[in-house]
Image (cartoon, rainbow, N blue to C red; front, side, top):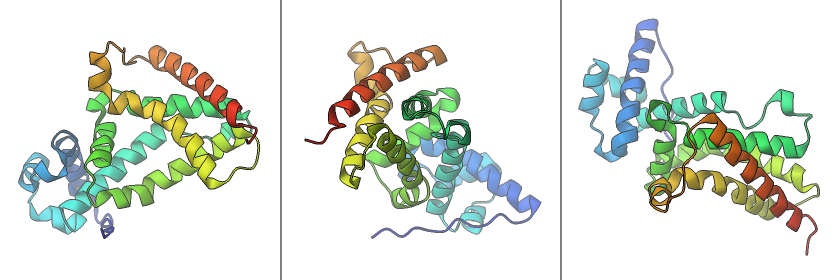
Length: 220
């Protein structure tokens, strides 16, 4: 069974600077080459740091990989939150639309080579022990938000299995555009890139999902 390794705490200003430099250097390398193919020497050289600094700050290459995943996820969650305090009193349908739109932005945003999505997709397809850390520290909370929103749209008490099905039906529509992009482009499916295109797709997925939820609102 994989073990979840703790991430080392930030130390002095100089130490924090080196730690941040290692994360910044490792991010594009892990995103493009994956965990196994990325060499610690290349990370250290890019960060202008000693290779030993990786073990000092993160305990191991895996510790650094987990730190990169966490930093990328935190930035993405802050930039594209699935729920906000301001929306807490909004209608469930409006909250669903917000969730879908920001989930699509997480998947389709192209700035920085879409590093968070590329790392997540690679981790889902070729999991390392970081997946346990990722689920525990990042994904589980985000998934709980999704289940809360779709549960409110459903408008009745539902067990966990049903909420999982409904939430995954919504999520999969969004993630398909990121995970299947090479196939979709070959099929002639346009991948939304601009805010306007992403907004239009969010409206479609929300309407489609609301129709599906309405169909299962009354239990058989």
